[in-house]
Image (cartoon, rainbow, N blue to C red):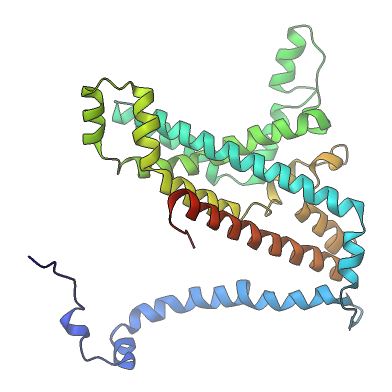
Length: 310
């Protein structure tokens, strides 16, 4: 029996594009505000890329300098330090978030009490909606060397208090802990949704064959959601260099050598230092690297899963 394919609804047949627009004008009208915001805040600012090739200040006309800003940028040790810090911090955070979200989703999926499962999901998801300013304030008080809870326990046990956020040795581990606490709930919800589509008949057959719970997770569950894992990983890879808010609110002059990233570097050069051409060049360089990372991730996806995400 030949397969039946879905055809266009009868009311669409014979309609021209203008007639379709008129018929569904209400939807187009609702789309206009979103389209205008997209143009104003996403596409028009792209013309600012031209400042990367100029010597610009608000007090004089911009003069074209070619690639001088890039030459100056690449000759600065602080730029490369910020670039490698960005890669190290972002990729480590991405890996921890991905693995943590998958593990937590698998654990929650094993819960049999639905009410407890829903409460757990809500609790771990709430921090995602909190501002980084609020999160930084909470953990600054929590980790305070004078009256913070952690240092209170350390001193009660006979140790010396530690200023965690002003110590280069401790800043990154603390940053990863805070970032995971805030972001892990978002990834967990995504993977829980993916787990709901896993074929349970395969699990039942595996149980009859004597497979342990760990074996079922490794050989059935993870392969079933591998497409979601790869897709989410690549989408997050596109944002791997966009690291400003969490670093800026937790950064201070004592740990700038460890915590300085590209976006805080661009902010200091552009806003604080009024070097607009140099900061725009750094931002353009960051965007190009982000595109390359996404392209590499897309190729890896094709090799691992046989499908491209983009």
